[in-house]
Amino acid sequence: MDAEQPESSEPQVLSGEVTSGHSRSSVDRRALDRDALLQSDFLSATGISQLKIVDSTGSTNQDLVRAVTVEPKKWADLSVLTAEHQTAARGRLDRHWESPERSAVSVSMVLRPVTAEGMPVPTQSYSWLSLLAAVALREALQETAGITAEIKWPNDVLVNGRKVAGILAQMTPLGDGSVPAVILGVGLNVSLAEEELPVPTATSLALEGATTTDRTALLKSYLSRFARLYRSFCNSEGDPAAGLVGGPSLHKRVESAMVTLGREVRAHLPGDHELVGHASRLDEHGSLLVVDHGGREHVVTAGDVVHLRATESGYA
Image (cartoon, rainbow, N blue to C red; front, side, top):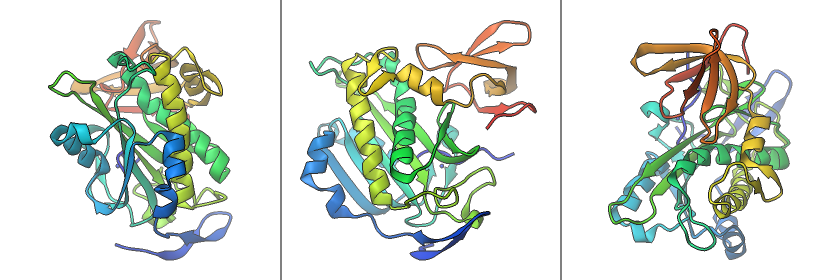
């Protein structure tokens, strides 16, 4: 799972019970259905160039970073790597964690964004790819698991105010002049019990009463929705204001689902700097615009922010 767990104040278990505040349900920790994931109809419909499933690895993101560096020609656009278990998953700012085996969807993919005509998408649009993944995951959770999720800037997906998934995008420029690759990882907590959560502000689909905890169905749903939105985004030359397939622009979809906007936030920045103000909107690069108490507008980029938290007035 290559996205960090919630910020605090990223053994094999095949079956068991999860107790929530409202219900008790059996945990589904079956292995991924490889036949379903590798079915040619599914791969061709999504445009996935290859899908590799491993039993265990340190980090799917780091595996792909190494792979595209060593053998770039073997890892085309929409190459996917998923793992049953990660032992050294990495998130933003090198945060690490480990989840129980088969309790999460841990998936990374290689992206080489080009238009339908083969023209490279401007690299300044790459900052939207993690937000596009958040939108795709949100849609998948709603339609597949009956879960309504929200987005917390810059890379978290929340359910009822607690983090159910994180996203990490890493750009790996190539020295041969080809289109830079982006490695995009998603980690989704599926069947973790309360005592298995890394921090109290995390959650899982099982704890939130999802209609399914079938990781194969969830992974297929996410990959299908991501691939469709990604291709539409690339064909618009990475313009976040352009309408995407099936409805509004990426910019509008993100803002409509983002709990960060309209609230007072405290941004911790490098060098022990702090910014407190009103999170007003996202700019054309997906950066957060924060208006301080003096009325000055500041641009906070995902690459610069160390932590982003609500002030005491709070938000999800």
